[in-house]
Image (cartoon, rainbow, N blue to C red):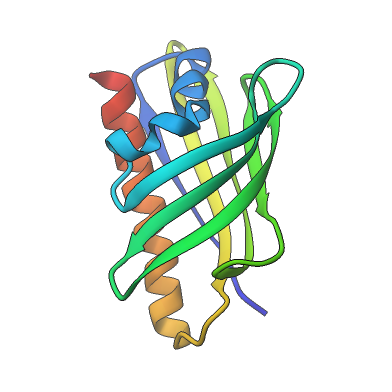
Length: 143
């Protein structure tokens, strides 16, 4: 069983502002390191992403997977991987808690590739994904 990781960062913006940037999945290649491309394949009744296919540069190989989203504006963006592709398991979420004009963003992630990776490398990869995403989100929102 794959263990997950959780980390948080404070961003100098409202939850609505942070949520809007985090939900603009098609823009991830412009600010999220390692994300080569994103194709939003369907949207919900609020015109928010429902499914999207990602391609990542994962050092050793390019990884492609599709995610299904469940969004609760402006508190949570969560996702899980669709079966198939390079990822065996992936569930994750961003949660947004606003306090006096600043927002604490918490990123939770459980991920396991569909190919063999030693456990310590997998944990390091999860940590790298989370830290890079949170720093990139903060920079994108605050600029």
